[in-house]
Length: 114
Ligand code: HEC
Image 1 (tube, protein in one colour):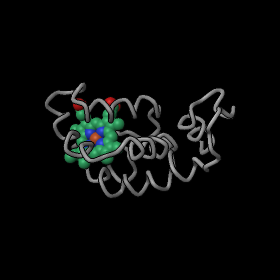
Image 2 (cartoon, helix red, strand yellow):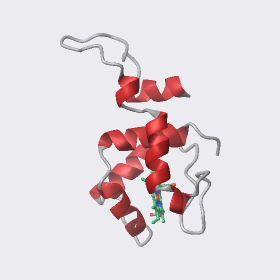
Image 3 (tube, helix red, strand yellow):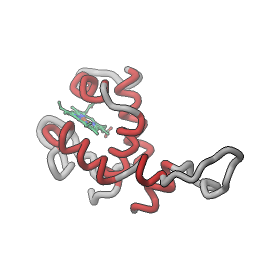
Image 4 (cartoon, protein in one colour):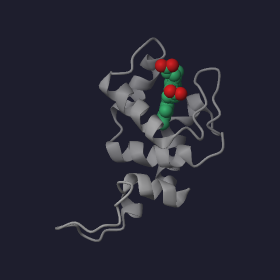
């Protein structure tokens, strides 16, 4: 799953292809890092979604959700595209997350069993 996460954040098919001006940073250290996602989750999300990500009375389970789906939800909560009574709980949480935080988060959440 680690390699799948890296595949996603590094742009999917064709990601290994070098483009003009592209440098050789280790993207695994910068983006989609599951360890970073685990830390951000523990600090910001576990209270509602459960330490095992299987949900609580307050929020649905999010373990093993498709990473692209989960990322889109986080992005939409932040932008306000996803709204509704329950979404109000997510809004303040995602407000301070960067795109890289979200990528790291979904790399982590998608790596777990449902
Ligand atoms: C204060 C409680 C709370 C916290 C903290 C919280 N969430 Fe949520 N989350 C919710 C609720 C409630 C929903 C359902 C919203 C809805 O139905 O519109 C939700 C929905 C989601 C969804 C969409 C699930 C789906 O099936 O569509 C994702 C993904 C998610 N949260 C991830 C996170 C992440 C990642 C964090 C930490 C950065 C986090 N949440 C922190 C309460 C919370």
